[in-house]
Length: 167
Image 1: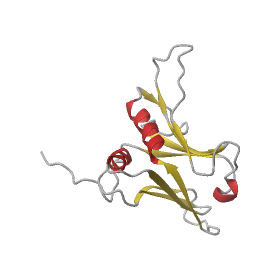
Image 2: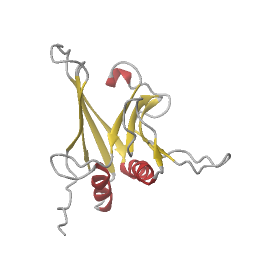
Image 3: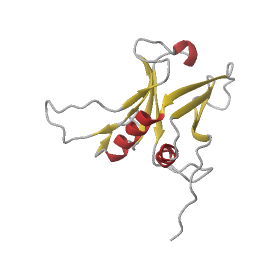
């Protein structure tokens, strides 16, 4: 049995999505980097990975273990995990991590543009460039002393590319 090489806590493409067709002419490209504390990001990721069920991001999306990047009351990463064994009164909060400087009561739309949104970061699908899942990379970074998770978004009206690094 071959063991995959140990992941490096480096920049990795998380997701690129096409928002419109090929004939669309995009507006100005913007880039922003959000920094999150790694420990609560990993806690949210572990929650999603261990959950019995997962909420889909949209009616047409497949529900897989994911972190949701949400922009509404602040901007944060949250588990999409659902535990159906909860009983009334047993409702622990879903693990999440706010971006530094973008906690409750803040509005990141000047930075991120437009309306509230929720973007899924798949935790289990291996990255095409290095063969490791986001969950594996988060675990590796935490084990090797990293304390910060940096999410970089490069986007325009047509596309968004998310990459991250840890330190």
